Image (cartoon, rainbow, N blue to C red; front, side, top):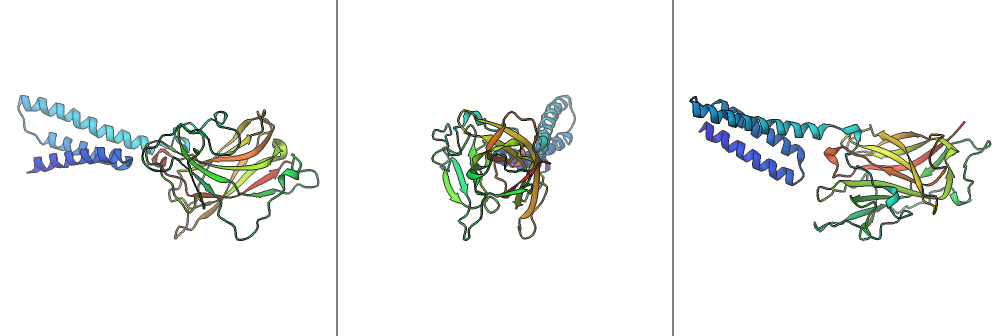
Length: 309
């Protein structure tokens, strides 16, 4: 009964691993593949002698080794952070339509019955938040008499969509809330792109500040798997362009019970840039491959612009 039990366990592990991979549970699939390989390898070693049996044993030994190594390799690849981000390229801003409105024409086809994109707007405020009147402010924001940091509350939108789209399609689901309290999943194998956009309505000189800080509330239960990338965008006609200020890892972890943790990420602004002005702040949320189909439970509270000098 022992050989039969081992064969049954190996067969069940292989079938369950295939099913787990199909349902997008890569960790479970990798572990099941390794279990199947280990059981087959043990069963082969327990076999008797004889030339024919030895030949079959070598063949099964090689097969078991391949299964075991394949599972270990898949498991190792899933754990490699690749610099803290995904292995997909971010959407090209040049191919997206101008402005921060959902794309009118999308190449996305989703037969799962779920939404092809989501636009998450801020919650309805019960009180008034004072926001600097950007259209009436000078493009340099700071002068010799005003060298205090400028705080800008986040009042933009979060975008959730899938490649090859560059922004949420027209039929995207629109709702209110924050990513710190809501989780979004991709129903298929395509990566879920998560971005935040805030248009300032005014072109700002890039030399206005030496760094930009982002204050966030982190309720994500997977510390070390999410980064944030800040991109400054010029959306004005004839001047469209962008520059990335790089990525910063989110290192905090929520408290108990799921209390969001406040954290500040800093992005230095280089004095040399391919664009001179920007009017939109775009934040990408690169995530590890292990949770590429799940959104990050991180909400942006405000931006803080630190003047030069």
